[in-house]
Length: 395
Image (cartoon, rainbow, N blue to C red; front, side, top):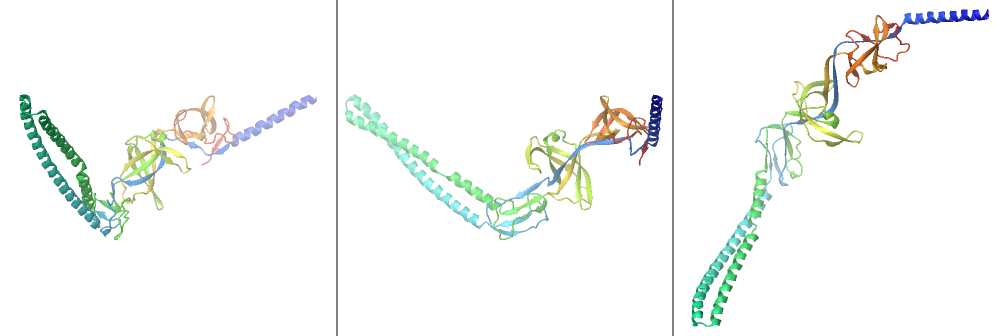
């Protein structure tokens, strides 16, 4: 009898569970849903870029000269050939004059020594010729017994001495040529003349004056630019990680994002150059990174004011898929050795196996298993979620 009651109680408990389960299933789960629509999926990364002039010319002083006149100011537009500043050349003029006098004196001394050696050479050559003629006569007389051996040998010695003296003079000619420093002095003169000719700073290009580092009365430094001329034809320079640079190519489109007060301006650019070698950069965390310099061409949009040296964001689009059916990566879960999604069909949850395709950091394209208009549960870990449970969409 007791056993019979146990069966009755168990049946009642099971019935209650089924009723409860039915109530839960009929009540369903409240959740937001993702409606699958075709979209353009983009894989990209961002780096900071710097606006730089495509053409820029720093101007230097060739000597520490006083600035007599500064004819321009920062921001001023100038034409090629226009006078920018005048530098004092008094000291350079004096140094040039001293070198020119030194050159004249050296030339005079050289010519005097040269004339003296030529005279000695002529006299020695005449002596050698006379001695040779006398030696030929003495030889015939000596062979005839008309001249003593001693007289003959004395004439031979005169020939040898004249020959040695002539060779010495030739060596002195060489020493004289080697001792002249006329070329060195001429080089110094030409350098000074060049410095003097550059005392007037002239604009080498059409452009805008920037970064003036001098004022009238200053002594112009020779180790830093006095000013810079640049043209308002800008490019963007960015340094990308080596592994990301491998995804880029010349002519690739990029998006430039420039922040202005309370607004962001986005405009297109094209990769102009990619350096063939990496350089070492230090990250904000103090780590060494191998990066590649990339330059980008762009056209400044109307109403946008850009300054050399300003920063902007560069978005490099490395991959793109049109009309893609995509879901957040977090919506996927493993199921029976493949990937799956929770899809809502006729108001109830079902497990839908899918095949993945192109991926970005956040999204993945579904190549098969989904159709346009399907609704996907974004959280596969939702409490109470199982096949057949009713889903109440929360807008």
